[in-house]
Length: 218
Image (tube, rainbow, N blue to C red):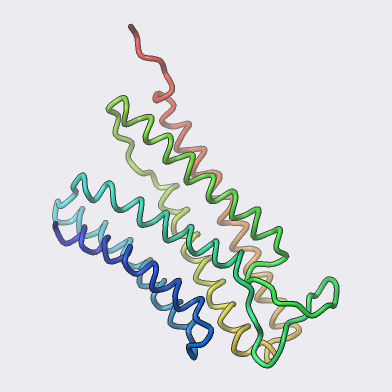
């Protein structure tokens, strides 16, 4: 196993570690540790590819492991942000719509996070199935710039929301009001851009490789 593949494998190993710290509310500043581990995982995605291309170490194992590591990392992150409520330091947050006290996930209203999660997961499943279809025809589909930009947006958005979850959990009553509104607006903009890039990249990938759907001549 060469160096890029070892780095990719490390990214896979880091995934359950970051999930643990995000969920481990009993650990002081656990979400901060989760952010650092997640950011490190994101960095390894660029590092292994850079080393593989620079040193000519691209292998079939790397082609197999790298997209799996990326997808599991992103899927784990978005599911945590949508499904896990955050308890504010010193008490419970108040829903800005209803005025009722409640614990909310980092991405709220909840339906916004759920819709974004479904779109992101659907894109990954569709593209994976598309690549499997291409493989049955001995076609190798290279990643394009849209997919790379999409990944950057996903990583940036997830890191922002993990940071927001940490701030809410530790310093919520210090940001109630305008600061919280500004953070939410930034989050919505990042999330919207990520969803748009997810849709665009998936559509472009399939359209540019539509030859996969052509029936073979008998």
